[in-house]
Image (tube, rainbow, N blue to C red):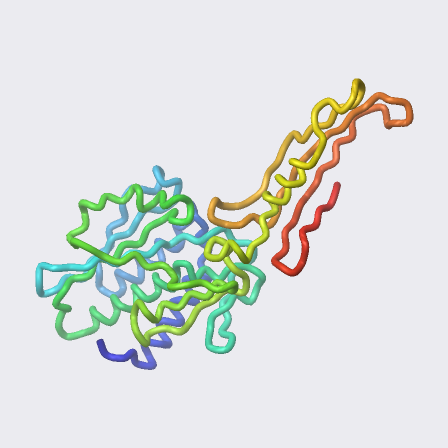
Length: 286
């Protein structure tokens, strides 16, 4: 494989930044799927979108596109279009040769770095005078971040390839660094987000739900004496099953008709927020 040209590098970075600006949390991939489909058609490829959306819980389906080779063999490449929920708008900026979100939230490098690489690979292969010896099947799935619901609905019998590669970031440090250079050598820069996506490195997160559970476990609840009761009635928090929750809200009640008390139930509402070390957990009552 030849080294990437400067034009290819620049185009890949532009594609990646554009993808990151398209909000596509799990279940809401329509805009991203439409943009990727349009790019593939602009390259000269057909795109087939399946009907997996409703079953997967998405407003879009999985995409399949092919680059035919001169031989019968082919390889499948797969990346997902969705991201974990966004805590802030995505504004991609280059900092010291790597991409970051200028706002305090994820960048979306998982998995849009891989999507960008696959699109650039398609441009390169379609731009050569001769087709590749081995064909390429490009698969873009939805709802990967929520228990792989999109890929579970994908009909693999549609694939001609006997094997393939599913792209995931090679490793992720506490700033959500995703280097895809190993996937397509010398073609892209590093991508990283300002904060960890938590699912990559849960050790860097502090779970507000775990903190709430610990607090509840230490409370005296139920009937405390003949006239006093205490109860935790509701608890809510988190955004996705693979994201360490940074906020959790619980509602509790204590009541007692004893003289000196307020004579009725007290219903504090506690909001527990986690911060990454070294900042401690904190809780506020409303």
